[in-house]
Length: 330
Ligand code: SF4
View 1 (cartoon, rainbow, N blue to C red):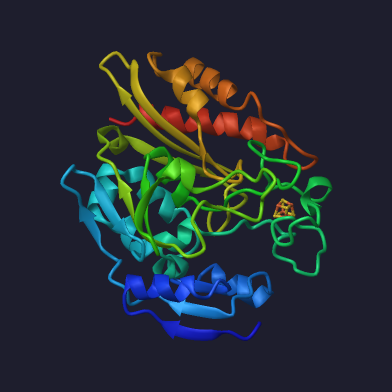
View 2: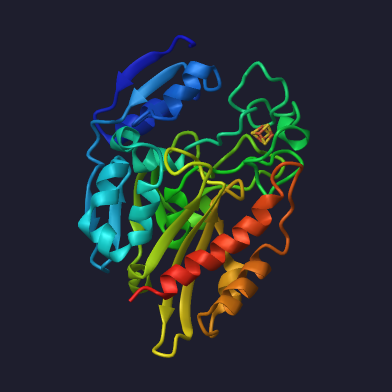
């Protein structure tokens, strides 16, 4: 591990100031991904600014009946919060499907947003070709082992996937990320927070290097009470998604779809909002035929590689299954 200095911020402004004046510095929350990356030599900050004492751990109801989740709220606390479980069960289920209880006790919401891909080539600094770790060096996964990699939104520069389960639920829930930088606070729509790789795969998000995530806001969304997170993975626990689906439905008494929220995980460089499928579903009767048509529409542009083409059909079936489960909820 590279040498680094350690300091502790007393408040948000101090954290922003510390990170602004040290471009090679990093903020330290739960550290469940960052410390691993530092041990591997993938991340090499020269300063860590510990933000764990900032008062950003609350989960509060907003006047508009939405919820504000502080950036330092631990994943386990969010997953078990009564209002999350009743109003946004898809978020609770997504969090509980990720990592282990010990990691969820440490991991923060802000850190979860900033998780980096688990692409094997990215994690091995001895491997020469990884545009995300070393821009311009190539992509080892394109012609290498790419079973876990992207089928939507990828580029010739990078076919990595985003690893978070929580973020798939937040994409479906139209969350807003509040951040603070040297110029004050700003809000970023969740759809705009993470990036597709394009020609700059080294950039995972649109967060500036001198900005601190303060909170994630969930809008009031009554249909989210009828929601589910389906995760398909190689083993039943402690594994990243091959494909996952966050789904919420609003049905009328004849099972006609009034509104739907759908997002996919494990398929793209960012949590993938399934807008084409949502459009296809509005006004249809909630049945397998409509769900399959929506899945076909969403995956129409999907592209597989040597080891991951199976994900295209898997994603379609996962969409159908998740929507069927939500439609059958009473
Ligand atoms: Fe690196 Fe992305 Fe290619 Fe993986 S898929 S080797 S992270 S450039």
